[in-house]
Length: 151
Image (tube, helix red, strand yellow):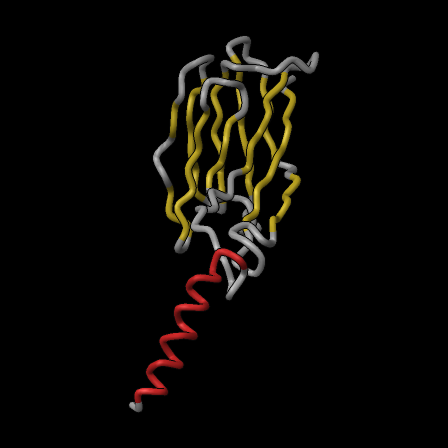
């Protein structure tokens, strides 16, 4: 390569590298998409519950966990195709189904509290998608919410 060609290539590379913070090329972050569906559990009066047992069936795989106030707990993960789905509660009320949003999974749940109030049925979720999760044009991430009331 000629000396002028090397100088030109080097100048362009340095200019773009220096301008990277000001928009030369696509700037993407490396955030990981957790794809969680967060489910609030309430009693018949609408009060948020902290202590209950939940079993969720996601695309045929069943995950279970007992939730308790102030005590984080997590189920074993289940492989669904190339994806691993898990279920947890952080002891703050809702439970989360990780890697479930954005995959069009059918999700059914069975929930029972200590007073034997229960809910069993298909989860009606509201899914939102951030099309620029890692920056403009850098990938999307979906998350979801749902609420169930025990009877």
